[in-house]
Amino acid sequence: MKLVQKHILKGTQEFELLDDEVRVRIKPPFKEKEKSVPLSILNPEPVIENSRLNFHSRVKCGPLLSLYLDKPNAKEFNAFVEAVKEKALKEYNAFAGIK
Image (tube, rainbow, N blue to C red; front, top):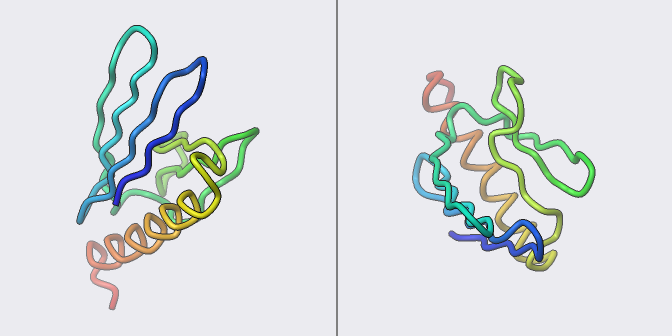
């Protein structure tokens, strides 16, 4: 599953949900960044801050994933967020041995 978000000034963010991680590619006007975030360390309950939805780690060291609210549209955004929440919980439970 993939979510692409565009911002006029900040460029493009691409989030790709894989089996056990989220790959993030950020393309601002001048420099491209890539990172992978393991789902097992994500807190499955995101926090809304300003115009963004942030997924923090389970130890609250700051947002690991930061998405623009309702971009590109509410339906795609909500489907992606629900999938991340579900997979993050599943991966953590598998890691912790919880059934």
